[in-house]
Amino acid sequence: MWQRNQTSLADFILEGLFDDSLTHRFLFSLTIVVFLTAVSGNVLTILLICADAQLHTPMYFLLSQLSLMDLMHVSTTIPKMATNYLSGKKTISFVGCATQHFFYLSLGGAECILLALMSYDRYVAICHPLRYTVLMNRRVEVMMAVMSWLGASINSLIHTTILMHFPFCGSRKIHHFYCEFPAVVKLVCGDITVYETTVYISSIILLLFPIFLVSTSYAFILHRVIQMRSSGSKRNAFATCSSHFIVVSFWFGACIFSYMRPRSQHTPLQDKVGSVFYSIITPTLNPLIYTLRNKDVAKALRRVLRRDILTQRQ
Image (cartoon, rainbow, N blue to C red; front, top):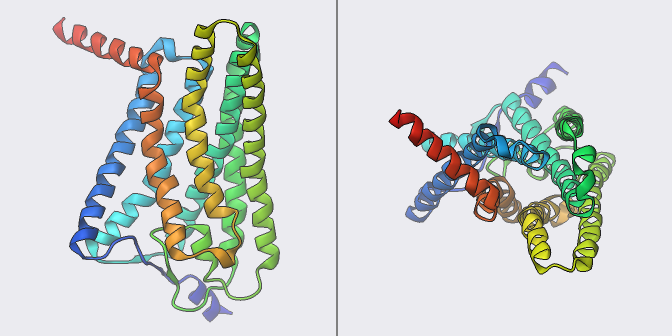
């Protein structure tokens, strides 16, 4: 038993994304640039929302939480991948793998829940504008954030604990650049049919149920927009929802591709492509989508910059 426990606690080997070829070195450099863009974009979004009083609304409070999740998500995977590539090492400790698995899964689940709740915020703003301040008060928005973080963290803790208690066999080589569930579960010895069933159930809860809520919210929004007589009101409504809808489409599309397929249909290349999209590309695009397509954020940025310039002159 002691020897088995020692074996289970041995290091894992991460295959990584890149080799030493010139092309892969260029792709690695490009990945680091994208990573730095994601970090700076999400940090800027959080600071801007905190600094500008006109952005202290439920919509932008939830957006700041989304940016924080994206910032933590991209920081959970890329630094370790970059460290391994630059050092030539490919190992990750058992505790490190479990920690990485917990954080990426909890942050991904939290983002699923939060995006669904953000669609409800848009529904209230467009369909019930006169009751918006009542239905989306400070208490409600804080509860939404807490529900997203806490619910996803509990789900991730349960899955990480169960997964890491299984015996691992073989070379312990993870065909991925971080400890993602589909790649790690392939190393498990024995029958895990029951556990895979629980994973599918949680996937339905954290993916399909939020998608249902988002679809329902946007169905009501579309019905309300069709009833609007003013073309200006219609444009404002679409402008308000378009950024969120684009982010939702990118995020849930990649998550469904990675988690709603049977294990037998997973290949290392498909897992890597899906993971790169929602763990690197999406956190980079989210702040760009919300800032470039949002006039309030652009105006807030100009106000903060103007205020800083005036402060420096004084």
